[in-house]
Length: 95
Length: 242
Image (cartoon, rainbow over all chains, first blue to last red; front, side):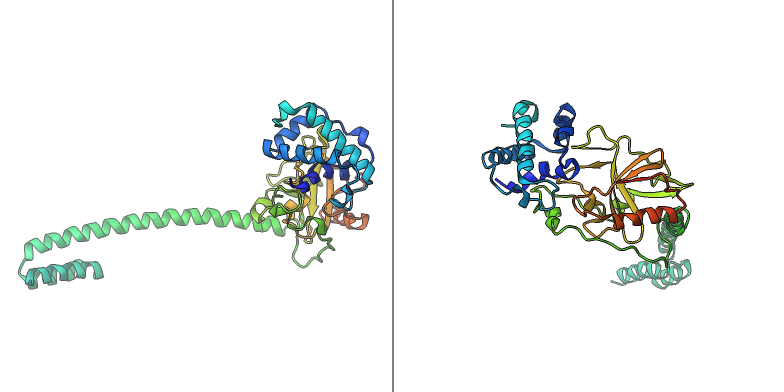
């Protein structure tokens, strides 16, 4: 597992900041995700998200040191990603 | 042996001099006048035919080159033009900020675990923006518009990512693909004089933001794109800077 790939979902926090509620993980998001990344990449992201929610105390901020949010918010945000991907496993081709 | 020697002489003579006179002299020396004169004439005809074909090919090549030179002249003129181009030689260069060290070697997949695309000069040129009659246009002269721009985090669209290099050349792309295409893609990881997002409607810039995770420009750095746009004749008074 290459944890670096968590930087892909985390990078959005540069744009979202603390306004997580404004960021919708809706159908548009899923369609775009599927267009931007192949199944192998999505599976790797999912695998790392799965690991992330089991390790809430990991210093996620160390992956992207200049993010404008703290570790707790990063974890909350990654949890949302995980739940969304888990719910849409079939659509995204997650094994 | 003598015949072979003469024939070789004829062929060598024709090949070397390409002329009928030399062929005739050699043929008479060998005593095979008529036959060799025929051979000489045939070779002369073929060499003339080949010469014509070569001339036609050269002429066609010249035309192609003329077209290419004309295109290059046009590009150079646009490049040097104060009104539409990005740079006039002799103008001071802008201050720049380097790529955040966290992203070094991203093009090799060492940051995101996916490879970030770094454009070469030709690919980058397609993304360049110019100012014409006070409005932002693309390389084809069409009014630039970001209504269709999207990213994973702005699926409703509306903003393109942009960078300006030290020479004041502005590049923008309508999409950002995390881990694959970022601000750094447009300058191949080189320093930038401004970076962020552009919201543009029919060539009119509505907003310029400083949002770039890779370069994290401060306000001062992004003032430089405003300065450059003004230099090229754009009214920037209504642009929202965020």
